[in-house]
Length: 407
Image (tube, rainbow, N blue to C red; front, side, top):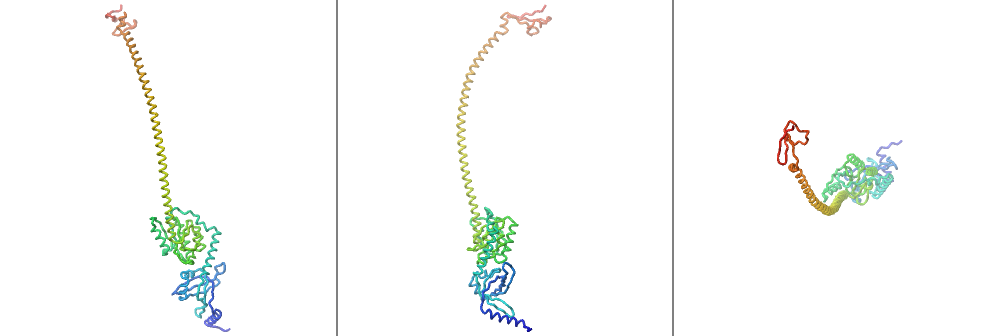
């Protein structure tokens, strides 16, 4: 059997490829890795088994710096969004085989609509799955606190959107203060899923927050594809706190937006929402205070009217009672005066009667009527049996006294 050198074999393969693939071709593949060096892009393209992560085909691809500059000018910001790990792409390639470096694909053009369409199909499949699991509106059903003051923010510290958010909050014209805690996470690429989920887990473990805010600056549609992720959407839906998103796109909603409690277009829109929520709460407090003041005044006036009425009733009642009692006093005074006059006359008559009796019963009056008073030892003797026969007795008459002895 004839033996070939490696170079001979590779040279033969090169001629076969050159003969069969003289023109560029369009291929579909998934980007598994992207590297950038000196203006060149180096990609690993793969194809997986259907409904499986098993890789059944793999090839390296290159975009040389001149072609990269052309494609960047053609697609603008969409160019780098398409060249992101995990994206399905349709690319126009020329097939190259080098005896030294082997097989590679030289990318000449991109089909942006294909990548966008694939992303949209994946997004719809995820939405259908979340809907079947009743997860689309779970977070939206969590009651939003009346005041959102302690806020956990998931973002990148260097992101312009995060800085705009902070600036907007801190310069609000009402002087409201917010306690902001940043949880660092990637806002683009494959790391978004794991880092945002880890941040949500940490926020719930630490506790003490009124809500979670996920914000990033604007970007091309594919830049935001990391937020069209099933695991991330499921974690947001099941978060115990209301999640507010401001992922920075004006037209489309990401799946993260759909499952969140409140989705807003930009980070500054989220800041406005927080300020307006606080303003609404303050306005309600002011309204309640005014209602209390009005009610207080009404009650005070009503009670004052009652007091005035009671006072008038008491005054009238007192005047009536006073007159009634005065009449009783006058009547009693008349009775007392009349009674005292009668009593005085009666007493006077009684005194006159007593004086007559006293005068009648006076000793000299008795003696004038022929009676005598017997005394012994200076004491009047009324009973003869009590006389002491051994002692002298004195007998008083109207005209004198005699002393005698009992014989």
